[in-house]
Image 1 (cartoon, rainbow, N blue to C red):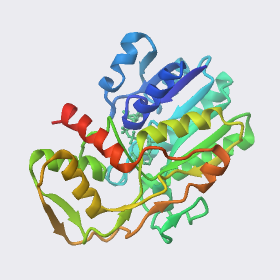
Image 2 (cartoon, protein in one colour):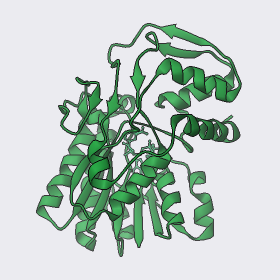
Image 3 (cartoon, rainbow, N blue to C red):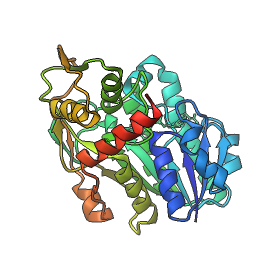
Image 4 (cartoon, rainbow, N blue to C red):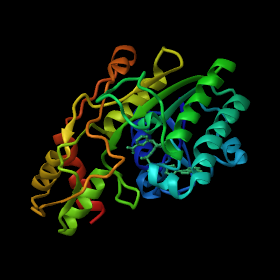
Length: 311
Ligand SMILES: NC(=O)c1ccc[n+]([C@@H]2O[C@H](COP(=O)([O-])OP(=O)(O)OC[C@H]3O[C@@H](n4cnc5c(N)ncnc54)[C@H](O)[C@@H]3O)[C@@H](O)[C@H]2O)c1
């Protein structure tokens, strides 16, 4: 089986690449390295298990070069995150929406029939229920939420129009190995950065807000399940089945690192929701997906990786 992973040198993409290689897939990666790192997949490139194309999904010609003979596309290439999209809304839609159309058109041209899309809970916008299933209102409130929603809708439309099966997996908060700290980063790398720098962790609000953190190993597994599923085009929310407070997270990460940097509380931010938990019952019932990595185990592995690679 030949797989194409767009955005395959990024955080989640590189973990999917790793699992694909372990399962014996012939893997191609296309990535423009705008937020990905070649070192995430270097070992697989050197062993010949992965071929890398320094290409851009906004350029049709780049996709034309890598789509031939592909059995399944894992589409992750994106301009990622709310703040990045506020800073550069054109780049966001160009990459996330036009890039997705380019992927779909290249699939049509080369007779590729299956795409697994990394969608995002950002498409829901303000969360109105604490547990989020697939029917939660879709009121994306950032250019990123809109472009991820539009790309998902585009995949559903193409699968109605053409011989394409599109499985859209909506992620909430994903964490794990290869997730580096950057200005647009998620809470876990931000906390890791503060802890290893010996700086107090900053929490907005009183820290009793809860979040659902899913380990990237579970996400990679869900992608491979979706790739070989007999079920047709559909959308699925993916979560861990549990949620924890931000206070618990800050304390647990300090304990794992063996460092007590303390917590500084700042006023809560207006856009923050109090509670968020994904309802992944549909993914469980239809795809047979169930998260297997406990947050405690996942954080242990992550902090070890962070210390060895980012400090
Ligand atoms: N990390 C999360 O918690 C999370 C949550 C919801 C959804 N997602 C989705 O998962 C996917 C992967 O996100 P990630 O967290 O691994 O981020 P990431 O930034 O590490 O990965 C994105 C990858 O896409 C590449 N890329 C960006 N623009 C490109 C372009 N024009 N052409 C080719 N490659 C391009 C980047 O270089 C990078 O390797 C994204 O589609 C994102 O929207 C992530």
